[in-house]
Amino acid sequence: MSYRYATERPNFADLASGQVFHSLPGHPAFPVRLASEVFQRCLALRGKGSGAVSLYDPCCGAAYHLSILAYLHWDSIRQVTASDVDARAVQLAEHNLSLLTPQGLERRIRELGAMQRLYGRDSHRQALESAARLQERVVAFHKLRPIQLRAFQADALDARALAAQLGETRPEVVFTDLPYGQHSHWQGETDDPAAALLAGLLPLLGAESIVAISSVKGLKLDPPGYRRVEKLKLGKREIQFFQPG
Image (spheres, rainbow, N blue to C red):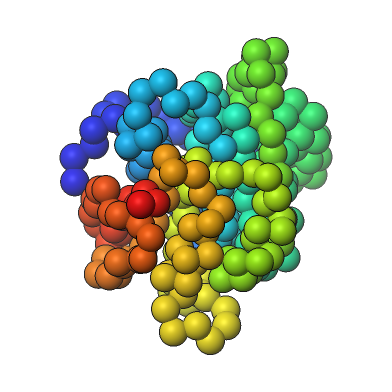
């Protein structure tokens, strides 16, 4: 795969998972540059002039990639919504999304400062420096326009629960990394959870919404009510892009 939009290689150290942002133990973080590329492809597929979007992940984990996308593409996002079936994941998602606010970063700076004074580690000092730089950016962002933030607990395969929680929100970009592996897996007994997820999302989407599904290579998806508009592969990952229709 060649990068079409995230062509530069900036230093993403301030956005590293487990430093300022919280991570779920045993859950690998989605690569920052790849997340940016996927999101920008979603925007391009929606077309020029579509405005800032509502971004949603129904299998959010700690909402790490949603949070970093807001930092990198603030002007293109007006709302971030995250949900997960796991209560611990939702709690961490709330913490990470709070880092998109000056108040949340101030709390994180106090936490990191306390750890640095207690343990005196270089990693805590570096995290403090990163948090200060992120706070400066977020304060500037909020002077222009805040982003609406929300996390809630729900089974991604329960279409009624998602609809009830989302209410009038119509996600314009859905970007999720499907559960797989030892520490991240589907719950329940559905034979084809990815297809069930897409079927449940369909009535919640607008005609121009884009759904980006990241998974291990080889996942075959041909969901009724959607058309696949793009696919890319990188390493062990495969990202498929769908649009209602």
